[in-house]
Length: 383
Image (cartoon, rainbow, N blue to C red):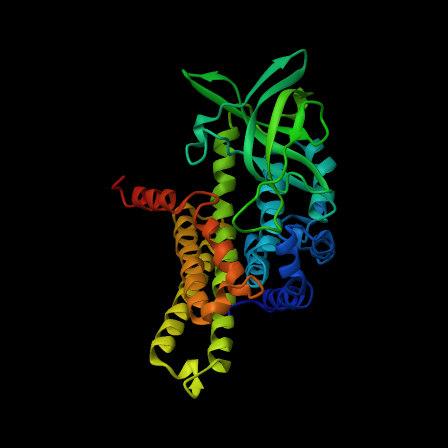
């Protein structure tokens, strides 16, 4: 399926990343999933292609592109390996973007060149054991003592937080009260800081090759200048980051849905049943048609949201619509593709089985689909 109305530059980018995905990412995906290992050579390859710097200005080593360009790359990667796609998505949207948008000039010049080149990664510390969709329930605290923030608490489900090249995490913490409510700020915490522990990686259902850890802060001390953005604006700033991230998740999900469709079409043409190919069965044809409909709708949804974002127009509702549409498409297509593959679909060596495991989290991460429906309902004035 083709993208709609791309410029020559965008078409070239999509083709380049698709080739990289097929020739470099796909061949290692099964083994990386089986061993639960993030292939750092693939990460380096994405860095060499400039993918981590796509939506950033050239001033800090970026490619001078936009968010739409990033999403083109994410879709191409998500088609063959969601773990690798999410490593890029989190590295850009959750790792570098908070510094780029809200950091001071010293923070930008110190950290962005390495992040945008893919030589370093960073994590986004928002979710906690008691604060998932209710991110305002943050319990991690940061108190100023002698020109330093003293941080205590924990975070969970933090992507790119324990790789060999992880440089820091940017974490939300309660730094006081404002009008009787928690004052939540954002603080940069370098890896290796005493008291900062990256706990053992999770044993996950899917995204096995994506690096994900819980984090613990025990009297962690960092300079007062490690505050990212304005004090008390940490939660609001991260919500803006999540709005953008939902478009990126939608692009990954669209790629996954397309990968399942392509695999199912090919398998249905070669799988013989009762003397003819599976694709001659009308029930299978209808299933494949529905799968293509989902890919089409998902792509249109993220295209629209990304274009609005890049044009500086409001996009919060459209991002929620894109994330909801595309993540449902990925999960539904993974289920249908697995069904078409039959017993083979239950074998991890086939990509559709991996997509079936991987796609569920797309309906949960960066705001559950129930949260997306709530946001959409609010835009209609009924919530």
